[in-house]
Image (cartoon, rainbow, N blue to C red):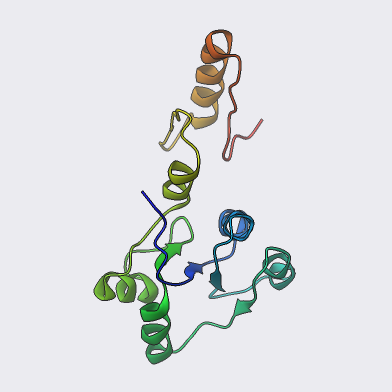
Length: 146
């Protein structure tokens, strides 16, 4: 997957994941627009440190216009499919990406992904421990609560 170059990436929801995405986009020379439905204290500063500015949530008309100028839409993990930004992105044909799409585009190392409701940290820890002796360089990443 190659990151679309037709305009900035619209990041919706500026929690920990999209803050990291914003910083990574900026380091690689990509522009982004940051929006959050309910900005928290410190969010504006974090986005500024990543090279951007936190925008207020646009009206429906403004959102359609904004989406038309963006090369991709990257919602915060867990943003509902029924969220208005998701609906506008899909109807506009704007590529909807995740942080995993960007990681895959920027890093060709093998990845093992663990999902589920219970036991993710345990499985991740076991897989990392099993792979370490054979490869030497293993990183358990994500929300591993140790």
